[in-house]
Structure formats: C-alpha cells, structure tokens
Length: 165
Image (tube, rainbow, N blue to C red; front, top):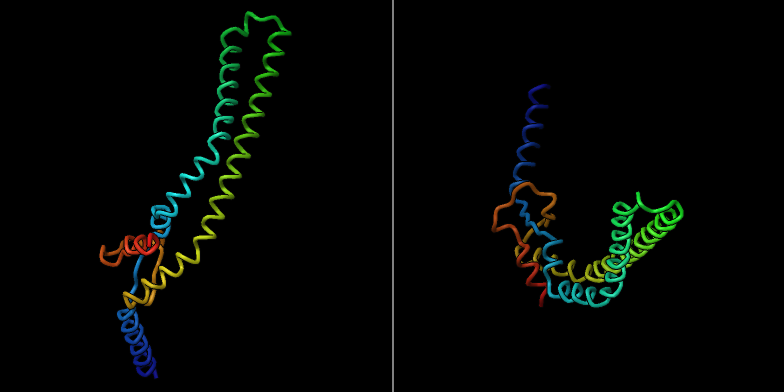
C-alpha cells in the first residue's frame, strides 16, 4: 500500500513539474511603461500648467512662514510681549494657510493622477493582452512580484511601444 501511494505521489509530482516547465511567463513593469508613455508625459505637462499658480501660492505661504519664523528667532528676544504674541499669531496663521493650501493641492493632484490611471487602464490591459498573444505566454507578472527575470522575458519596452502607438 505504501509503495502504491509513493508511486501515485511521484507521478503527480512529475506531472506538476512537466506542467510548470511548459508554462511561459513574461514580466512587465507597468508603472515604468505607463509613466514613460507619451500620454503620461503629456498629462504631466498639462498638470504643470494647470497647477503652477497653486504651487506658487503654496511656495509663497511657505516662504512667508519661514520669514516670520526667522524674524521671531532673530528679534523675538528684543520684542515686547505684545509684538512677540502678534508675530507668533501671524506665524501660526501662515503655517495653517500653508498646510491648507498644500493639502488641497496634494489632494487635487492625487485625484487627477488616479483618474489618469483609471482612464489608461483599458489601454494598458489591451496592450498586455497583445503581448500575451504575440509571445504565446500563459502569464504576465508585474515586475514588483519577481525577484529576477531573464532580459528576453522582460516585456516592458514592448509594452511602452504599444502604449505609445
């Protein structure tokens, strides 16, 4: 009985090894391909144009807060109590303004990037499917899930070419 069980187990193990040997796998760095594409570069340039004014406001608020902080550190000991209190309140108000503007800008930018990714998803999926078919692969893995891949199985450049068409 033991020999029969071992024979069945050995046969199953050999069959599994044979199936694994026949599986063809490709690897792509989706993030690199997507963010190196022409669409992503155009999107990035548009984001720069759309948010340059808001970024300038954030920098202005940050600089004003730094200037007030530097003035408080430099001249605070020589100021009377009411001047120091007033300047401290101004500094805190500028810090609040900076934090608010920065958080609002970061949130808006993150939402726009997420929308870009969602809009690009069907195109990326179609390009990955093309790679799968063209290379007669059974599986394409993201590069983050792979420790090492032979260069000829890294299909990131081909994916980028498909996304740029």
